[in-house]
Image (cartoon, rainbow, N blue to C red; front, side, top):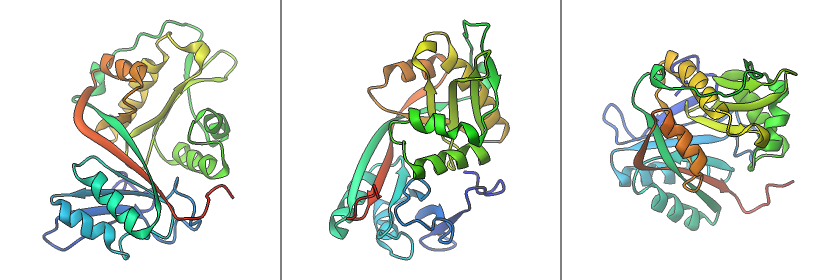
Length: 253
């Protein structure tokens, strides 16, 4: 989490009790996300020692406002069942996304790069690039996702490759949980080692900031899993859960 490093996402941490606690929730401060339909910006994550404590935390209206759209992240057993049950009870829509959790065990110096083109160079992402990323993102393509990507580029580590004309070729971002995300390479540049080079670059930035090197990958995304394995990432048994919760009204307004 970036919360103890300047807190650029303006998150806060809630515990079920103090000083002894069994559940921890991180969420944006209530005044930060003003749009009740913006699940991109309204990111929550829960950690717990006891699944019943997790349920009590998520059911608490002071901790989680189920009247607003939000995302819920976590990697622990029982989380899916808890989130599903609460969503059903509150009659809100819950869309689950289950990812393979990948973790690098050591410093990124052990990452290898096999970039095969001399015409590509590392560049610097800036918020003006967000529109390109938004168009390439399967879950993007709207104004809320555009603002979300702009914020990730502005506040968190990222890496990209550009061609000789200064056009984006490949990139990877990180989110408020310091998770590597939004990796993409344009089709015409695939197979040239771009993914490995970008992974190496962003891994070094995150590691220098004291963050673990991890990400979630869709189970069917074999190319990404192979690229991560080649960089020394390990596939963990834990599932990386992301739930998108939306109230009854349609988000596409």
